[in-house]
Image 1: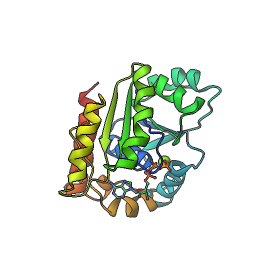
Image 2: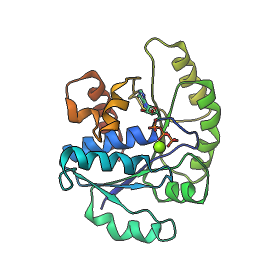
Image 3: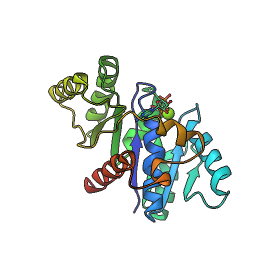
Image 4: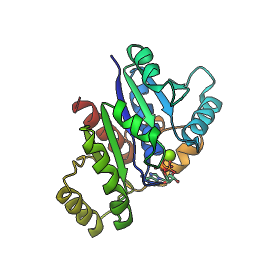
Length: 210
Ligand SMILES: Nc1ncnc2c1ncn2[C@@H]1O[C@H](COP(=O)(O)OP(=O)(O)OP(=O)(O)O)[C@@H](O)[C@H]1O
Ligand SMILES: [Mg+2]
């Protein structure tokens, strides 16, 4: 049975789509069967898939984009779960019926957050919501800058608030935007770069927690 992983946070711009795409590429390149639901009306993930089709060809992108319909979502997931190893959901930046339904259905909720006070404050209510649903939730610090005291301060504050934080952290690197714009992930370029190593570490950490 496929595992359902959502990338969610009510805060916008924290890296949900970037990390969802990069983890989808990592697992798909590792020969897992991967499907994605783009539940965000901004359709960033869908644009990325379109760019990927242009880059690799319609049938060689390795990831199935499934059509998201909140009215039939619960049943859709039950119907397709057996066909995939991983079903990734890119969530909208909001607490709505849709994002709550996504969290309800997810086996793992990954919450990207930047190590900044603004992200911290905007992420806490979302973590509360997920916790109320007794979901396995992990905060992933994204766009981490080297030697930033703010990162350690944010980790302490998140821990104090009872959040589980992944050991993997994702650095701030322009290659994420560069690869995203052409429908690629960082591990498509090289699996040996420091950037790819962080994505591989995160992917493995998520896998280990199943
Ligand atoms: N690790 C990173 N290093 C550098 N830039 C990053 C990183 N992660 C994300 N970004 C950039 O931050 C911006 C927001 O990222 P992204 O779209 O993934 O966030 P999001 O949470 O999906 O946003 P939204 O809430 O609008 O859906 C993008 O321009 C993306 O390229
Ligand atoms: Mg997004």
